[in-house]
Length: 321
Image (cartoon, rainbow, N blue to C red; front, side, top):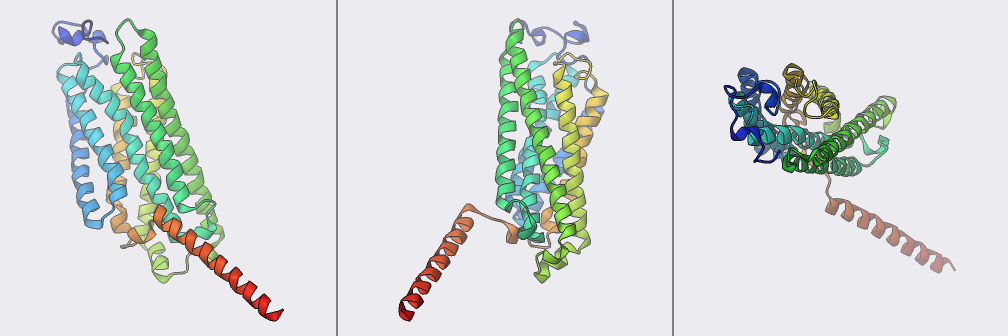
């Protein structure tokens, strides 16, 4: 893929066969423009909602993911006019590959808050544990995908081993994302079963009960579940796509790509925007957050109470004796 042998130095559709391009088809103008426009609108909506409801963590992941989606589809639009260009190909390949990792981060943030609303006492893990563990998994996946894309982009045309190493690293990153999402969905189902089984142990605060019984809350949960499932389907597809390399029939089938990549992400992002937590949490988003400082303060307070109790016990025992 060096610049000296890159067909983009001299090729156009009028001069070279499409088989020499980075993808063996001319990307659809209408289809890719549609996705770009949808993601641009959703980006504006997310920024407005994020600022309005101060859902900064949720906004951060979706902002990064949507910006990458827009850049990726902008690259595909450039490839419509010349599929031999290398830089637009890189924009498409790397940005669309890593974007869902950012989007998944926003989904992971929600689970800890959901646990608080139903009751931490029925959860296998603490709210912060869910967030920390899955964000770390997401970060590992992101780093593997990004580094794999970087290695592939610098590999020369005659460096097949280096190029394959980059592809394998990207596959490892995508596989990590698939496994993380699968475990995440399993834990969500486990918690849903605990909620159903322990109705008498749920968070008894009135405003939490009202929230759990609202239609908006149920719509939020359904939207989050659908978004998670569609990102999972997309990630499985990308693993299968890259498994055969950039020149496999699956990697060069635009119809399949537009459905299992574009449509899946569109559904996910529509759900995450339409059923925004700022709206569906009835103002309780910031009341369900945790922080390292808060957790530390709680632990120190508990230690202090235990210590104080032991001191009083010794004093009573001393007085009796």
